[in-house]
Structures are given as structure tokens and as C-alpha cells.
Image 1 (tube, one colour):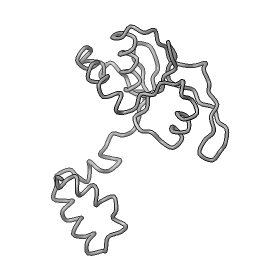
Image 2 (cartoon, helix red, strand yellow):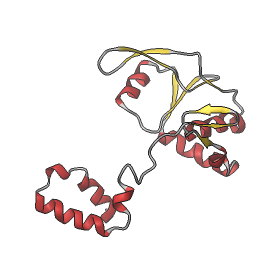
Image 3 (cartoon, rainbow, N blue to C red):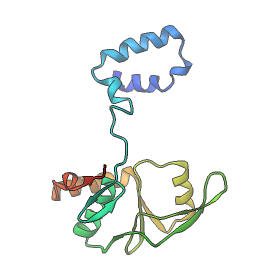
Image 4 (tube, helix red, strand yellow):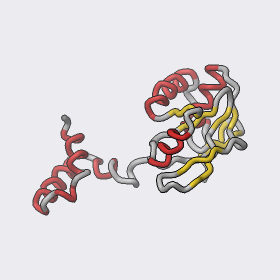
Length: 158
């Protein structure tokens, strides 16, 4: 296991460390360049940014990538969903309404990280086709090869 990976794993459990062990870990942590920036919300770009591309509003670049893949590469008619609303029960048992991302031959949802709420939606609506990180990786590669400017074509909303 790399030093970087082991520090990340240990770093997740800092509350279990003694003060001395924490200070030793901090010294090692600071020796790795840019590590503290790479592992903070400031240094990572984990925020999902809404934007516009091809005259259509998307909630994320991944949604835009999925749209390109489905419409231009696969040739499936697809549009942003504005009408299909699905009811589900959240983790507290409260009924809620959810609007999936796309409709076409099926109903589609694109997710980077799955939350407990997303699991509720997925479990209660097996008719929705989910595209998570693992399913999006090959799609992103294919779209990037065929349309290398897709990321810069996406204009983030400010």
C-alpha cells in the first residue's frame, strides 16, 4: 500500500489516535506535497456544477456526457426529464417526490456518489436505469475520444 493511501486510511480514523500519534501523522502528512490541499473541500473539486451545453441545462458534466453518449454515439432519443415524477419513501419513511434526470426509451438517473436517499430511490424504482461512477467511467472515455471538447463545451452556471 502506498504511503499516500495508508495516510488517507489512517487519516479517516484520526479521532481514534492519541495526541502524539496524531502529531506524528500530521508531520508525515505535511511531507507529501499538496496532500492537505488534495484532501480538503477547498482543494478538491467535488462540487457538482450546473451548466448549459447544446442549449440544454444540465445538473452536472456527467449528465451532459451521458446525454452526448446516448444521443450522438448510441443514437437513442433522449431528453431532460421535466414531467416524470416518482414517489418514494426516504430513510425516515417520509414520502417524497423525485424527478429523474432523463427520459427516452427508459428513465435514466446519473449519479456520481450514491447516498442513502439514492439507495431508497433505486430500491423502490427498479424501472429506472442508474448510471453511477462505475457505469460512467467507460462512457466518459468513449465520449472524450469521440468529442474531446465536450468538457469545455459545458458552460458552468455561476
